[in-house]
Image (cartoon, rainbow, N blue to C red; front, side, top):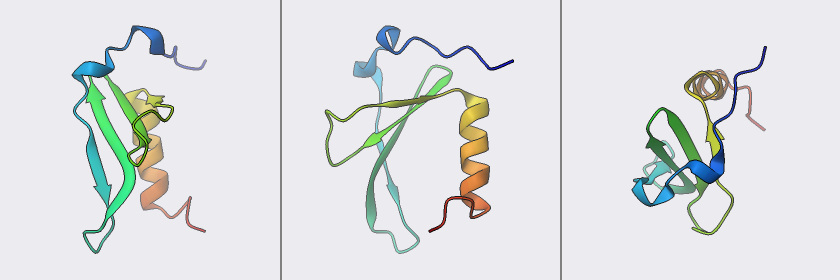
Length: 74
């Protein structure tokens, strides 16, 4: 059974504190992440009006694990 996604319309993005990602050289990437309650948000930091991706904790953990394992390398 898939986890129930929180309704994006009910998320108060004004309380989000966005943090820019960085690569191994300390150069900021255009990705920003914020933690609001028990959800994790991700957006294009170069465009604050861009769509916001919403993750549950389990989804975020799987995404991070896949990233560290090279699953998304190209």
